[in-house]
Image (cartoon, rainbow, N blue to C red; front, side):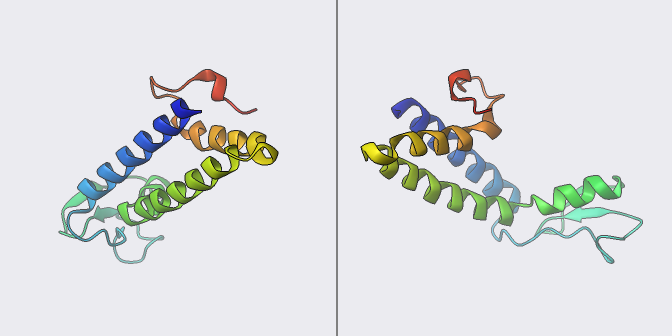
Length: 123
């Protein structure tokens, strides 16, 4: 189980690093401009008012704004808690299978990463 734990810890740390780099000093929620989400002209900016995306389709803008650095950092925190719980579960014979399944599910979003083991795939 060490391989999947190390894999998940590394991917979560990468997510955190990217989100922190994208957010600048203050990972506040990104904004898609006045009238979000119905604004006809979409400009997504960060906390320094740098334009991240301009003139994209409304649905793409909504998606980008929903996955801003603040949200990713909140997800990183939650994923770390879930991973800790899964590690505790696999140490107990009664909950080992459930903990393993939980970790495999956490790994699923990273299945395109070269370090992902197809044996972790959950159907």
